[in-house]
Length: 572
Image (cartoon, rainbow, N blue to C red; front, side, top):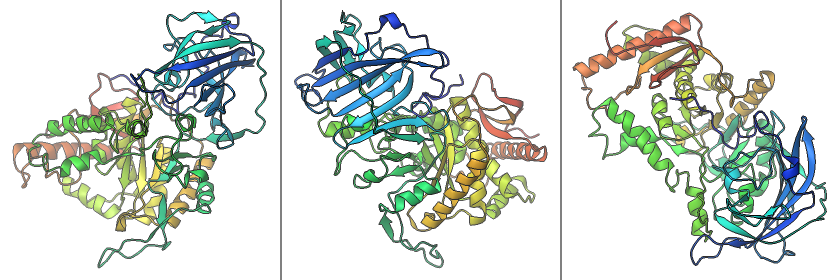
């Protein structure tokens, strides 16, 4: 398996200038050149979602000794040039934006103006201060006009372009258009490397834990208000699920947010899709393995570990490539339901993880295409110690860090081969004494996601605890800067390698039917050997103070570790 790093909205600008070719000054239209296009629909007998597109070329600018060009894109619902644009995009790139769409386009600056709302925003990454682009797959290809292959030029402007799934036809080209500065710009510096958030748009009203014994109690949930968002943002929360009414509180803040298409106000197409901090409609894919285990069509017939190893990625891919509530085409489907015609384009939200209890199956979920995994963290030492002791037949007491490293080693080891991301979420069942170390150690080990669960009785983590953990994580991150998680990962001490097709589990694998209930048949005995060998390798790594991962042996060559320790299902 080839090591890859995700070229998504959070990562695509991090190395923008390292390998791009120099701008050919003589091939560019002169500053002030303007092209006005009408739109030819690519959907038979259906009008396009906009009627006119204008492209303007601005001044040249050197960036670190390399020439770049400013340009501006305007899209209008009407063909009249004097009509107000739906949005204006102004960008500084190393290349001519209307080059052939098979060439890379490297952004240094990215500014968006939406006249309807009066906003002018510039999106930057906190680490590098360079342009942060929206998250959609092939953003530069679809959301920037590109010259059609056979198009000729008029005054340096191509006569035909492809854009947002439709075709643009040049109506006129001219020169001498003034380039006025945007002096009212709000700069949003966003951190795509650490996403701290909750999956709900509400909090508990009680502000403290409710006893869950002798009977479970649910909390009273109330929507977040305008006063709540500054508190959360100051605490370090930077990822929000919002209702359309709540969107106004986050859209101009240096945070990321998700919202559905419908509502008041409805999502503006295409303007809102140019917001780099709007990341779509889907925050996560819900528990692929847990749902598989509970599927009555599966759990009585899934027999072998290899069944699960093949079925988990198949089910993840099926949901990910769909338009349902956990599908990467959910946003596209919502816009289509409102009459938006995409022509030849597919709109795909590619960058969201699964949210899962059965963390040991993370590798097989990554095979299915989802962009990462977040573990449902209910960390408690006593049950962990008891489970390990049951497999080994001897008592062993672990520290909080040892427990956490066990869990995170699966998540990190599963995502590294795919260049994907991992993280943890704190639930109400997590021992409060472990929660702070759970979020700070996850950060130290390279986690991208630190989330909190809101709702559902004892699963719920009260809002004051969410704020406290976010503040502690923020303070820890400020005191302990880490390397960029989108670059090559660090070399670690040890990979504990599990045979491909297997996965480890401290719990009851009742749903893998090749194992008998008494644990005495051959498959059960071999699995017990595998678990014992893996746990001993884990304890050896702890004894030697090694940083380790659990890795599935599916790669031709396992890289990034100083030592490879393969464990088998044979007695040792």
